[in-house]
Length: 275
Image (cartoon, rainbow, N blue to C red; front, side):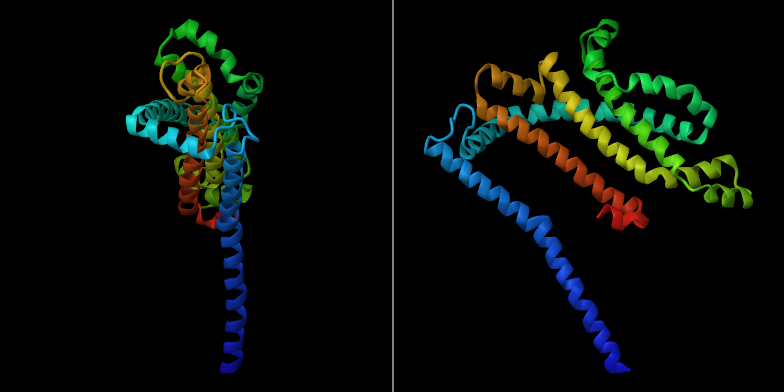
């Protein structure tokens, strides 16, 4: 029996070890090496004159521009302004969308009443309503944040509502049989049951918010990453334009990483799907 147990244990260790190595290879080393090779080839093509440095500045030039903007404090200032706008819009639009989504998912009457307006407003490009918002609220931070909040509102609303509607009816039956009140049903069944799709909506909302924040800054702002990118284009400082794009991408990756870590803690029963 001891020999059989040792044999079984040994047979389970090897696949797990192999699977771990494959995950590390595919999830970290392979993408890293691919990026390194691309950067080396890119640098060589620019240095050899095969690529124009005006349109495709060498990675070393982009790094120098990044260090210059960072040490001068300009990059930190622009990132801080963009993040403040994006996070404020995410909080305002995300919370309102989540609350309405929970209510619409729970109440069929409310869903029937509100859904036509959502279906009509959602396809409209959010940047297209910026002139109307500027007319109503004037040129200032309020208008920018409102437009950004609208971008966060719809992903949170739709995903939260879908999360509530995907809860199996048996959970509501169990809560009813145990005499749970409406408040406890909401807090013990609806909120945790819809949480996976709520977090998915939050991820989509931040991506939409970051996109629209940059777009708004390109059009009407005097500060922010979007304005820095636009000014780099106007002055043909292409390396600074690339810096702005890379930093914007890094913000999105960083937020998604943080949200991924939070999701594994909040919804451990979906850990295999998250990973």
